[in-house]
Image (tube, rainbow, N blue to C red):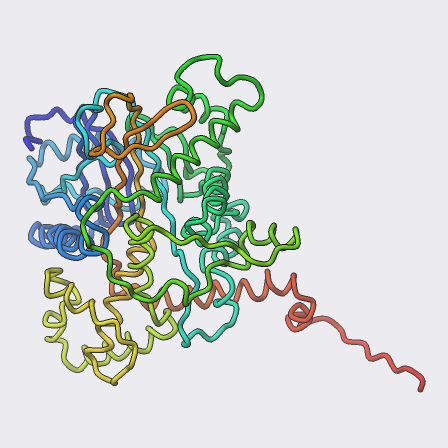
Length: 491
């Protein structure tokens, strides 16, 4: 890719995460990803190159083994003219959200990652000239902890996402909790999946975005007062789902179009577009864990209607949701069982700091690193090797819990569709599509203590402020400052 020959005006701000900033090219289906750092904390060019190489190697040698060749796009490292990077930085700076400007884009090393633009179709060039619709979903953790190390029974009943929602609202992150529950999406039951996707559309937060031809048309903005407009979304979507005017009109138009969108997303998520056997490693039988969350709005509605059993159809083994869930379930011990093992590794590193490289904590993320992840035993033999394996598996699981799934759709005429091209059908249209996964950077080893503390905060807040209100007995336990009156009855 000859980036140096491209005018910086052809690139635009695409988005950013905690450690990187992404720009996309207006004409070509590629993005550039630059690392970013707090002011005055710039790393050397060698350190940045090493960091980027670790990201590429991790995707290539580890995550492709879990998800499959067609789903993971690890990209490559490119070296760019420094003047090009500085001009690009000046161009996109005004477009960055204020909350993201606490870190500076790396303009000194000259290195970046070149990746495919996953808001575009990744499989078939014959549709590149046609409109592209892309839905980005961050599904989060799709199972209830099954570990015996869990100390609070509520964690065996209510999923992490649903509990965390209440703490986020209390901290001012969101105005109201979402009705989305990851267990509904991962259930494989179409009714539950439809409910989950509708809930995401109602409260997108930062778990759902929709792009048209690479431009963001729907999703959460940093301004928490912004209200998602379904009517505006339907205006964008109508040409995709109802190409002929007059087929759908009136007050039900928006609702009908959104329903079509949800159906197409569901069918794409349940599809298998990768014949590779990667991702078939079963970490634990899914039936061993609880298949529903007691806090799910879908579950509560069933209970109100006198039904107490949720149907869980199960996910097709080849679909990306299944592979994502299996990678997530490498968290076999829960953070409560994992944290003492992390401390064991830390104690060993304090005594033998030179062993950090040998243990591959900071890479290289190669085939040898992946092979060590295949030990699924949970019997602790007291060794550092066992502890390290569980720590590394937990980091993989956390990566899978925070990844994003990209579903790119493009209208497809009937005579263009064949067995080689995956197609999903709507009522009045058909789409060829590609499904990809991104945000697959390995979660930092150093973040484990933070995860342990955060887990405690989430659970304690939920027990005290949510479950206690629903349970009169629990509520009375938390009323510590109220007066108690003893009433004596005459016998």
